[in-house]
Image (cartoon, rainbow, N blue to C red; front, side, top):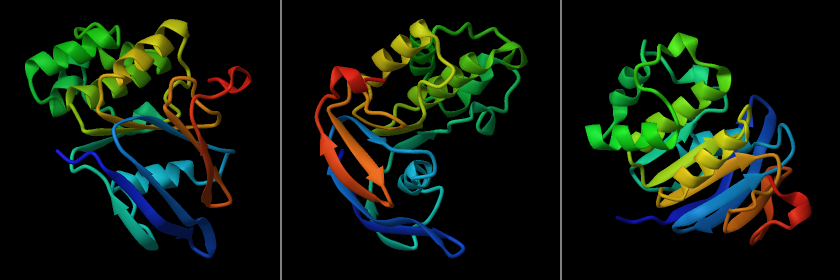
Length: 197
């Protein structure tokens, strides 16, 4: 399988407001983060990579098996129980079981009883159970306690390619790229301790 991720001069506008103005980068396997201020276009870029939005211009190349975890888990959870939700897109029963164990969730739980943080982990569970080549996650650590953050970080290391959309650099990402004024203006390796998420 080809794990190459290529974003070339991608542009996107909401009406007359240009959000992305020539964003470009290339990645292979591993974990990367795109970080920046509120409203800088991170979510828009992620949705373009996932095929949810179409760019105004530019070229996007990602693996065919790409999944997206929304910032708000309520945008992607619909079933009554945790087991039913994870089973929807799971490639196998074994994959669903692994994902549930990694996210510390009981498959018998009613989704209506889950806290917001647990629902966020359930959204990750569904993505992991589909065994994607590329997983894109918008604000992956929002509403997570220490154990939830650790569980997500550990599980992400088993996915071939990961792109995290965050406000700050991510300590365990091999590459951190800043999105500013619609463009990727720089990339670096592991974040400095003072910048870690």
